[in-house]
Image (cartoon, rainbow, N blue to C red; front, side):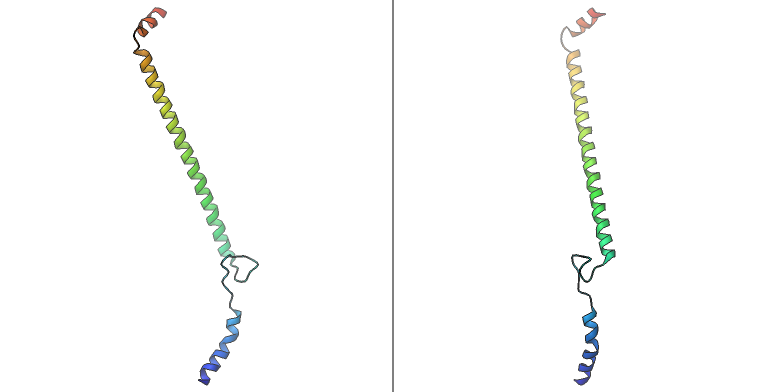
Length: 95
């Protein structure tokens, strides 16, 4: 029993030196870890870049879809115009 008390008394000063967990990683609180702060910052930057790229890709896809739909409308409209009765005759009369 005395042996355990001596060991416990010897380890007690080390327990008071242990840093508390700084879950917010605030530099003004004990347990601040600059490498963790850098890692969080890098991850946030990477996430922002990925979100920007995703928005750009979505915009590009939307523009491509709109352009294709407009081309299809124009093509269909041109087919309707050329197949109208008398349309061909009018074109011949203009020449």
